[in-house]
Image (cartoon, rainbow, N blue to C red; front, side, top):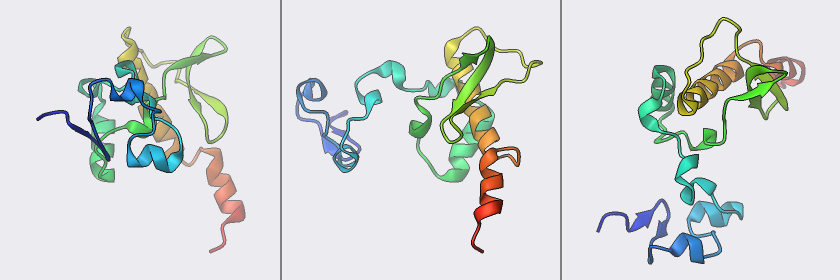
Length: 136
């Protein structure tokens, strides 16, 4: 029957995720907390809206999804569109000349792409830390 398993857990009941303690999958038990997008479909990125860069990125990385980016959204810093980078605990603003779509899902996909590109760039502050503290 379709929909009887979910990445490491067996689905017994249609309300299993609502009635249970939220620690059903192997990963949830390992990290000791539930994974939010299992309960709220609005947290799951719409993969039909993925940018070509993100499509290629998850293909190259060998991933099935963008789950590690599900909570990355386009926000605003001092009135300018921006995305929050948890690694540097700060906002990365969107270039001023970039036109953003009206749809929030599309904006969020652009935010995810910008975040990944910034984290991979030589301008990311962690690059300086790596150079300063690298052992080899």
